[in-house]
Length: 294
Figure (spheres, rainbow, N blue to C red):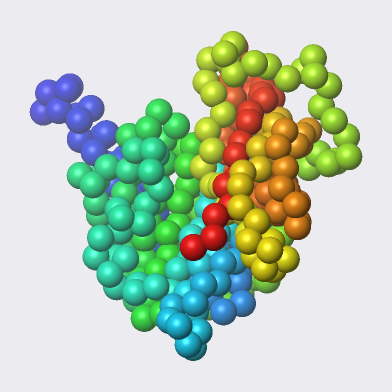
């Protein structure tokens, strides 16, 4: 066998090992500090580096308000990777049949990379990202829920990504229960402390801009809905090098608690920090939250 053929066989073997580690639970070693988490009313548990941020949305499915669509966004940033879990009880089988319709835009998920996966008897599909940041996503459908499990910012060969997916279990409700809230950043920054302006870099001068991976929606308040308040809240924030959103400034606000709702939502954003000269840096960003009544 020629030298080049041996190299090719070795590369194929390594790729198969990485894929198999994602598909089979218990194959990867746990990174330091990771713990199992679960959500009341959901059917999964999974390991994460710290307590995730979580937002729950409930919307009526019919005029009688007898059935509600419930969806959730969970997310954590740690050491250059964003881990997210999306949950939805709206026609799970349809979601799995065409999972790319429910995948996030702009993250390069490639239909050609589709692989069939199965976890605890729950069918699913896996895709990898062609984006420069790299990423792996798995979509599953139980009888009650559609789930989208994602690691963005690393490839399938990364041991953290392998452990993240191998820790996923269905029907085993174990771990720390997660509630709605901002979670616990891996490297917390005191929200009352402002990052000095001199240490915040312009987006124009970085080698890689900050990339938002999870952006929860801002919710209406009952008072604003009653008074039919509409418009846009504009915020100027710092996306810090450690993955936290800080230095929040209100450029344009709205009454009846809508500005506060926008601030609450922006604190839940999960992103990959900007990069300059090989180092993670903090950058300014302006964000808009539009409130409309339907």
